[in-house]
Length: 62
Image 1: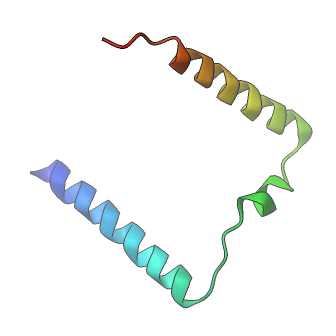
Image 2: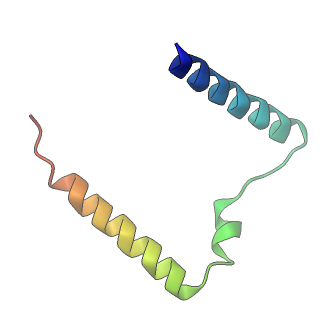
Image 3: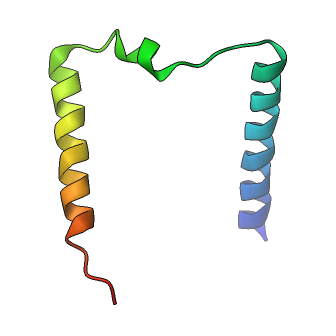
């Protein structure tokens, strides 16, 4: 029962935050955040994502 309340609470919090962002015309652009990332951090993230994709592709379906 506690898990259900937690999940519903998180969904409601996300909905309220989304509503406020839309009401105030706040644009969240992922490209804007990517401008401030160093080259080494960008390489680390892309390497991690590539490895995660490779691991996901190797999982056999049962």
